Image 1 (cartoon, rainbow, N blue to C red):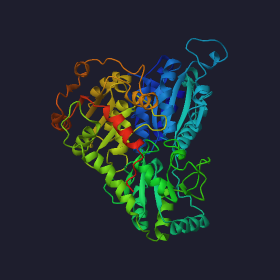
Image 2 (cartoon, rainbow, N blue to C red):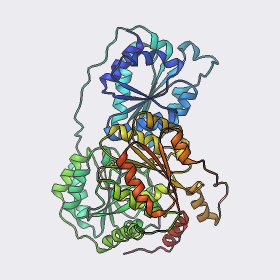
Image 3 (cartoon, rainbow, N blue to C red):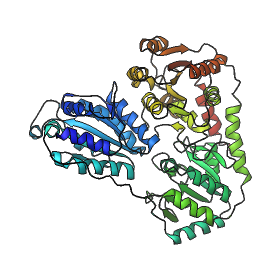
Length: 544
């Protein structure tokens, strides 16, 4: 068989159901082989979209999402989404075509050192130089992307794709990931917790990756300890659990950091420092940290754990639950939780127009069920979502918070619809972020997605304007003009509507979710709330 046929059979062997991408001349053999496969190839309108969709596919399934591009500009377009998956630790395998091997040593049309470029944004990458290497290289790519987890990359030259081979896919084995912690470390951790007066848990995205939310919630209940999540860890413990305090990720002055400032022992469960540096919550390095993770801690001055429980989170948390004794729940943690909840409730009936961010989030939360999905693009709106949106289950708030890539929202929303057609999906994006991949509104319509996109419309790069105003009292180079979003949506075959009064938002959102299809709701947003929040937090008010 041809190398391309073997390549596809190996992908089938790995359980791949979707490949997101754009074909190119150097991938034609692979495309022809894919046309005879049960794998569904989903053509998109930009390679970045393909990578973001594969990223979210990996997050929601636990198995690597797969994206495909051709060489040169196709591969460079793919890179942002691959880097995003790598920093957000989403399992992903990127496949890029390449010119024939005999072009590698000379200047050649569209030929770049793609493998060299991808080596900086993946855990592993390789070029296939002979067709008989394909089974081992694909197996390794999927294993590494799953175990780390993160991005892996395979480059397939066109002559290798056409090469004849007798090789076959390797037998696929599934192995138990039940590596266990050191019992001495467990004993030390329990002693630290028992001796603490104000212990606190930080739950990160690692809990979601390992499907360990039930075990975390059981530990929280048994220990009677408060929980703070990272933005990507939202939903690890439901927001309506009495032990949930809030989500951290904004600034050192936020209410949540008040709680962390008061903590003497921090139990970091599945915490990724790429989301929110420990410098923000342990600047002087004085806190005792218990590291609970399936890999060694990333040591820095503000993150030197007293002990490390290294193993699968499910196993570790069950053991901690069995060994821990209930702590006294500090009253000031309840005050912080109430302050965060009140900040959202205060605006649930606010009629002011343009619409305040808090009111938009309130309306979205009312229209989505516990297991429905909210996707956030990157911008000022992400901070509002991260701080205030109550997540009630794991993987119900999807965002980019490692690389923090604008343009993530629409592709992520499409992928979420494909992975979970039974759930309602809403994407919130800024008027800048949505336009970075707006071409794939056509993809959403073509695939028959039920997807509602809410645009926070302020005609500026709102987050940069916010930060510039904080730093200099003014902003420069952040304003622009927007297109007619309603007409733009309609031109793609979607349904566009612009909100003209605040009180109609809930009804429009409800109608869109009920009717189905792709909707784009243009909402003029009052981002004066950004600096108002800054003023409040700079007052260093701690509700403790």
